[in-house]
Length: 324
Image 1 (tube, rainbow, N blue to C red):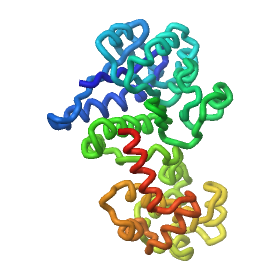
Image 2: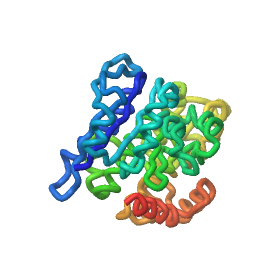
Image 3: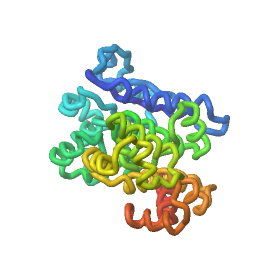
């Protein structure tokens, strides 16, 4: 049994706690007898009820009591109250004094600031929500901030971006503990996309599409759902109902890229995810992602990522082995 403790404070984000807790709970329900089981709890320095940023009151376990029972993984949650928590001397001292008691420690979203304030991220790579990465770098220059990663793992210290990224990070922890099979079953049960890698962009083409004006959003969603289509300019004009000039102007104003570049980025995201599945051959990846040929896919990877598809797959596999 692996005890996972989510450290909460006044003003914590409820989803920063609920997301990881549900991942570990589902993994325990779906695991076979040979796979580790998780027991998740929410802890605080007071052991009293905590008011979340949404106004809901949640019960917590006294941190010292949880420590006595044994904590395998400690995750400091984020939320509006993280700035105050990062100045809580009792909490910071508790983290510093007991770091060696945890096999794994981490933070979700702005909980990263609490770990940084405790000095636990000095000299390490870390990330946080994209809206706060510059603040993290300014206030904690000893931390190597990755401004774009969904989550970062550096020698047993994990940090993640927003709420959904904390789910990605928790799934990666399950994979490190029990293998990809259980992580995939857990993701499927939660109806989430397994599995975004740690280095994937916080702001994806899918997220861009959700925040576009209707006429452009319909076109972007069509591209994302069917990346294998040709998408010539006349076809894009027909789908969008815009003139060629209006089409290019809309892409530049809203996305700072051309229609062709967006199509390429959409295909690149599909290819990256498929390459993380070892059973999918590169030629098949190129076909399913819409590149048409391995050479076209290779050129896109080199141009956009500075790495070949084969090297990308090897990098992901290496990260998985390191996490394990």
